[in-house]
Amino acid sequence: MPTLLLTGFEPFHTHPVNPSAEAADALDGLELGGVRVRSALLPVEPHAAAQALRGLLATHPPDAVLLSGLAAGRPQVTLERVAVNVMDFRIPDNAGRTYRDAPACAEAGAPTAYLSTLPLRPILAAWREAGIPGDISNTAGLYVCNFVLYHALHHLAQQGRAHVPCGFLHVPANAAVALAVPEDRPALPYLPQREITRAVRVAAEVLAGHLS
Ligand code: PCA
Image (cartoon, rainbow, N blue to C red; front, side, top):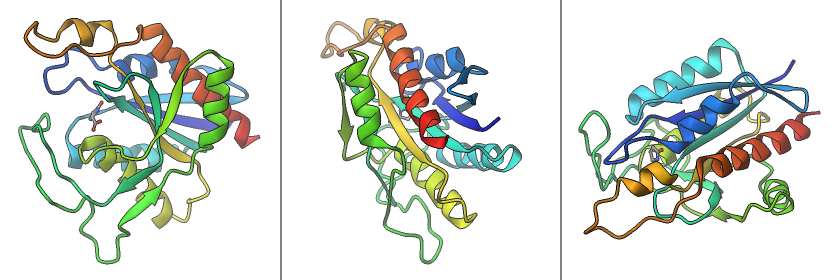
């Protein structure tokens, strides 16, 4: 059976949980439209995350890759259109490191950017059909999520597997993340975790449908 690699991230910064990890965990092992979901958790540290990702792509080469992470402050689920070859962190990663104006990939000839190869419009349409407001985002930021999307697409391209659909879905805060915001900080928009998980599931179902 074809497999879909679904990744979420560990908690980071001041967030007590990461809703992307909870969604990935909830969907792990499910068969969606004839495709088996294999979930994995990535560290919020660029080089450790890239290494983990390379291992996941090599051990059981997936037929589709759906990466996900938290974008605290966004009011809706969003599909990233592009990953750029830049790291510029406003907050340290979970190893305490901050990268400024650095390349995500320093290899000679590494492209400036990669475009998502997910079926973006069909996923948006399926969300709408399912009553889930969502949108395309034209920047995944310059932090670990952008880095991981860049490296996933770069790795697939280098392996001659650019035909494997691969992209990134950013989810809003869930209630636990929103409740952890101190009273003197601006409140975060949030979605209940079950809606976040449902949005990831619908995206995975569309992706599964594109494989058959
Ligand atoms: N969100 C961060 C990194 C981990 C996560 O879940 C980001 O958007 O880069």
